Length: 306
Image 1 (cartoon, helix red, strand yellow):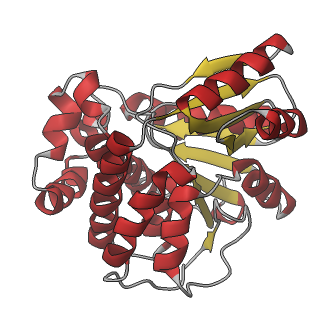
Image 2 (spheres, rainbow, N blue to C red):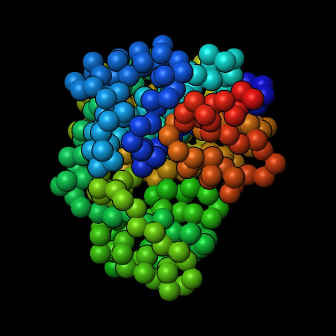
Image 3 (spheres, rainbow, N blue to C red):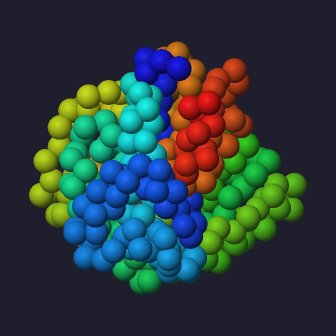
């Protein structure tokens, strides 16, 4: 496993579960400093939330986003402590912030400051603008886009996750209608347990609120290849990062394009850092002949280390 052909993928919102990160900190006590730094910025004990909070508390946007990021950074650090590093980083939605920290674009403290501002703005927008999201499985992107266009109201594809799965989002009635149409066409439509329609215009108030906070952050050129959800390509510099990150909140996640571009560059080892195995599952459905692993706890880390 060489860093030259290894990419770290950082988990997105919805991956959280009670107790996540605890075994990694028990195995490597120095990782606790990641949680401690985050807690100082957030104003609450983040490790305690991961270790003891019930699922419904952990699912709150203002808790889940920093919690997932902390666990993701712990996983990457645990790999690093064992000599495993990557020469490229990418994340899914929220995960792009952990990727920015890992790539050296922002300090870890600034990464948590960004996530604090982002999660608070998104929680507020979700409460003000009720929306819905559905994972659509078994229909092409073109079919899904066509159905969304022909559905009354506001609904569109927002997460291009794999060749087999696209997530749609929008107003509750419109999203439900599009999902029903696609189901009748033979697709599997799964309603996601989220507070609103993320990565859609229903989050515009969050983007507007978040941007001034991002303007206070110092951004640096990444030290490794860094990939963007908005374009699906390698980041082309750090100009206007506050504007880009605000746009990220209301723009589709082009994860399949990111994987295709990483694959074209010869990356053959994909390690998901963070809770659950969502992204490693998407890689499995999208790329052939590559090595796939995930690190979310001490047990999954031990598998990689042999």
